[in-house]
Structures are given as structure tokens and as C-alpha cells.
Picture (cartoon, one colour):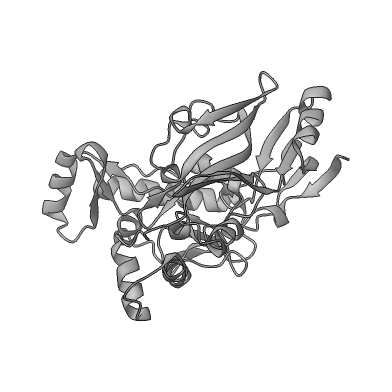
Amino acid sequence: MQVQKNISLLPYNSFHLAANASEFLIVQSVPELQDIIGKSGKTPLLILGGGSNILLTKNIDGLVLKIAIRGIEVLREETSHIFVKAGAGENWHEFVEYTMERSWGGLENLSLIPGCVGAAPIQNIGAYGVELKDVFYELEAYDRKEKKIYSFGVNDCRFGYRDSVFKSTEKGRYIILNVTFILNKNSIPNTGYGAIREELKKMGVASPGIRDVSRAVIKIRRSKLPDPADIGNAGSFFKNPVVEQASFLFLSEKYPDMPAYPHEDKSVKLAAGWLIEQCGWKGYRKGDAGVHKHQALVLVNYGKATGMEILELSENITASVNEKFGILLETEVNII
């Protein structure tokens, strides 16, 4: 285990932004993590997984840890469920594929989400009617403060909309080591999301299985979202805002075509992409920083944009949406 010096982070972030780390280390096991933090006393300034949900706006003058802890293990089986533990460094989509190959249902709606398993609970990733918390059982995380490993159940994680305790009150304190999922052995696919039903109909699938739902989700995502391998991006840059019923009714009178979806406690979730598009940002480009031409929710790096240029663009978008609709967008991407 050797700390590397002055390493470019360009290969380690999906925005393809040029930034350097003065120290860099790839951690492949829990003992390695305990050695570098617990015994050496080094304090990492940034923890990296797949790098698919960060915006690097500067060089990191300190230690960057890339978590590459792998391994998939079946912990136990019940009549209708199976408990599967995956290392934090496992690629998320590859893990979803692994579960579907064994006919374990629950993750198919989350197909093709970029990143690693360890980042999934931090964001409480979600797509097409399913959130991570729906299939979550527990996780293990290293406490950087107390230098111990703790287990977190679903209530301990305090999952919210694209949120968790690891992203809010305890941000930066814990390093997720592995995640255990409770999956269905006899799964009934979740096709409640309208776009999935429409895509399955186009595919000519009347009685879909989990693999059919996954294929539909992949087709939808590829039609809407740019591949980070082709153009730098971190997927949805902003969260879909949640507003009170009264605010929604006020806005819907002025904008009757505004998309809206029921949320918890009678609140309403609005489509951030639609709000941004109404402000004229879709397809916008200044230099190499821009807004994707097919999906206004996605900010892109066309080549040599800097993190600060992407950040400035996001702030301008936030200001214009707030001015037009009175809604303050929150970023889904972590800004470093």
C-alpha cells in the first residue's frame, strides 16, 4: 500500500475535469483503510467511489482515498427473499446485472445508474419508481472520528429524497465499506412508472420480467442521458424540488402544463428539468460548459471546461429558476 504523489483526478471523475491530488491512494480492503487512517493518522480530505456524482472545482491539497473494496456474498436465504452483501467498490450497474442473472428482483429499475455500491446509500439513489431504501437491509461503515466500524439499519440511515444521514448531519464522518440488500426470489416487476409501461409496450412485452424492466430502463436512460464516456457529466445535476401543496396550486394556475408528482405528506415533487428548460437553458453552451441538448437537468463538459465554469453555470441556472418560479433548486451533485 503506497501513497502516490501529485496524481491527476481526471480519470476518476465522470465530468472529466482536470484536478490534482497531492496524495492519492486506492484502498482495496478494510484492513488497508484501518491502517491508513487508524494507524498512520492520515486524514483524507476526499473519499472517492466511482466519481460519478462530484464536481471538482479545485486541486486537492491532501490525501484522496479511492474506495475499491470488492466482493459479493450471499448472507442468507429465506423462502421468498435473499440477503446479498456487496463491497462498496463494486460497480453499481454490474452488481445489478449480477443480481438479475440469478433472478433476484428489486434492483432492475435502478439499472445503468453510474457509480459504485458504496455511494448508493449516501444519495439514496432512485429511478423509475424505486429508491435504494426499498431494497436496503443494512450497511457497515468506518467511523473516521472514533476509528471503529458500525452497522447501520434502514432507520439509522435516515433516508430521504436523494438524501441520508451520510449526506446531511454526518457528512464526511463515515466511509461506507459494504451494503447488504434484501432482494426478491420471486419478484413481481415494478412497472408503475409511466415511462416504463410505454417503453415495454414499444418493445412488445405484455408480461414483463425483471430483465425486461431493466432493458426498458436502459433504453429510456440512454435516450435521455449522455454517456459520461462520450461527454463529461454527472447525470442529474439538480434534485427535483419538493413544494407544499399551496405553492403547487399557485404555480399550476400560472403554468398549467407544469409536470408534478405526488410526494410524501401531501407535498408535490416538480420536474427540475422542465423548470430549467422554461428558463431557456436547454442546449445552452458557453465555451465547453453547457446544458445538454436533450435533458436540461444534465450539465456537461464538452471538453476542457473547468469545475468553476460548470459551477458558475449551475449558479446562474439556480438564480433564473428562482427568479421565474420562486423555487430554489438544490444540487444533487457534490461540489468539492
